[in-house]
Image (cartoon, rainbow, N blue to C red):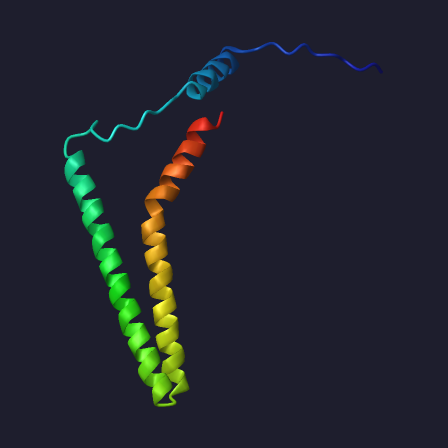
Length: 115
């Protein structure tokens, strides 16, 4: 018994699939902030949301620090730990909110250079 060799013949469906993959690979995107109507309103909403997030983080840091100070002064270790945690979480959230635009731009640029 011999091994039969079958020639692989490309079908029309396979040719279409290869053409589709080639066409999909040629897709590109060019982000434009002014490309859609209302983009300036969206930018104002994002700026306002970021400002409010920073105000809330600052308020949380103040309240957490005050709770930490008062609870430490009154020797209440449980509330001192909660106040310290609130102050640190508020500081970390302010860091994330402040760094978010830079991180998004960094990864968008990194993604644009990928091939």
